[in-house]
Length: 379
Image 1 (cartoon, one colour):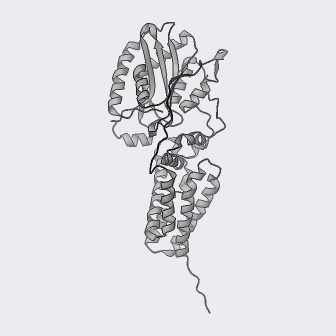
Image 2 (cartoon, rainbow, N blue to C red; image 1 turned 90 degrees about the horizontal axis):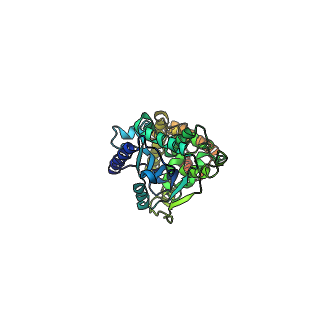
Image 3 (cartoon, rainbow, N blue to C red; image 1 turned 120 degrees about the horizontal axis):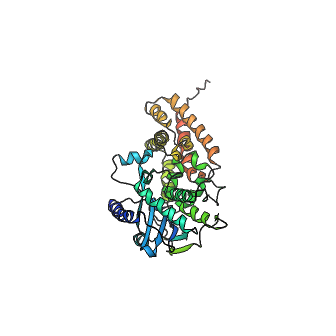
């Protein structure tokens, strides 16, 4: 789901968009007009891990070839980080020349596929008008939601609006959860996979019945019928590159296991203390995001049983040498981790979080043993 992150690119897109926006008003498409869905391949940057969806409108008779993109935003928006975190940052639709669009993806070495929509000229015109109108009205603005409102779902919405029916619906992988669908996209990006595994809550464990990723839309379009014929024509490859597998000396499971192994094997008070501070701080962050953010994917995060803010109380009593409460709260956290284990064992991300689970139990167990009240033996 491509996001234009750099200010210069953003300004260029707006300038090009304004040209096409002005040109496109009240333009009547010819019988040689084509409208199509563009599906763009994944990249190795965090913003491009899921690909991108756009709509192309071309008409050789009107010298028109333009691509409409959802997912642009103004990086200079005041309080950008907090608005992005909260989920009330305004995203919007822009358009740019097809040749510039393709050149950008060619430069990034990312695949591009095209599926032409087989609809009457009147509906092509209506779709073009809807897209052009969106650029001038309040419809151009929307608040991004990872599953419910993104560059792919907006394309689905505008096409369904044009067809006056919910024609485009998900046809594949409806028996998988959103989390399961997302998991393979993070292959070769270990810490991104770990981060999303622990920051996402129960929403992503629901069955993935909505189209929210570009390649989901591509696969569904192949299967959708409209007026007794396929909605889209045969998939056409515009750009295709050999997949480049990223190599990183740190972004891999080995550094992850090395760090946790270091904590377990060193068995020093200072190391255990720092480790528990990190785990508790992450739990505090998850709790904050769950209450503060309107991103539903961050709410009801059961991973807080593993990354538990109660650990701060353990650390407090430990630092004040209160053996009784250090022991009790250590045991409580061990029990919560065990509960977490039985909850997580059925989830797709159980394996990636299990090393942290094991480390927590080991660190808390030796902490509890050290502070357990010893029963005097009378001879």
